[in-house]
Picture 1 (cartoon, rainbow, N blue to C red):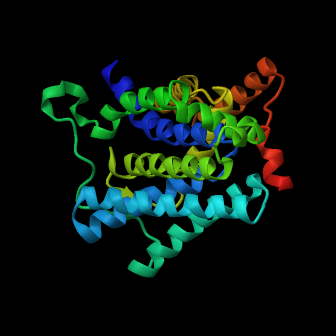
Picture 2: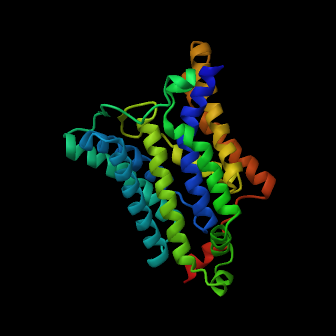
Picture 3: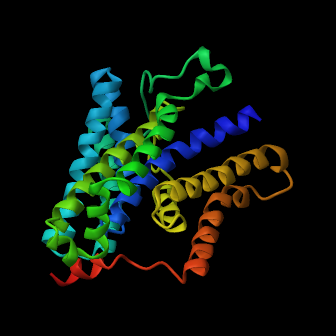
Length: 297
């Protein structure tokens, strides 16, 4: 049982951090389809940062800086250049996937897997079997709670929701929707950097091309499934992680009787099923009303 729980936490924690980034962006009125690109940027920057600086702290700061700058670029494109947020987000994902491949190629002369000498600090023997988990896993519940408090119990959260749902009304109370979107996307960039760092340097210590494997899109689906509520979206992300862990377990137990590709596809099938259920329960996913303002300004 401990092995299954550890597998769920390892696969679910990066997904949860990126899901929270999608939640805060959606509250600001932006459907952030650039989560996949931000996540892979965070993973690549963390491993390269560890190799170049030999410091986890410096590597995390580099990853956060890269993801925040990319998020600011997304904000500039959709808010100042009036580009379609969906297409701009997909463009950011393409930039992240292609940019990390170019960075590795430029630094090492090949696109082979890059291995770091060490990863994120672990919890240690005091936590028993769970000591193999990284500090990012231990911090995750507190980050989820903090995001819930920020979005649902603070003036900032109320203004952010107003900027996303009723931007014209938000201006009447002194909240600048453009600035609120910028802040939300920047916070999301930090969360994506942590998610990417946990993926690449938590249980692993390497970066490989395409290692996010669609997790950013799964996080986006969790945002929809969880109705952009930080706790509900977290449970949706955990649901996808549970399916993924069970898929890995099934490969070990029934790999010779069930097609390998089908077992690997289980998390993605669960993602599609979750979005379908969400649409049935709420009459389909609707973009925030602030989306129209982004197009028409």
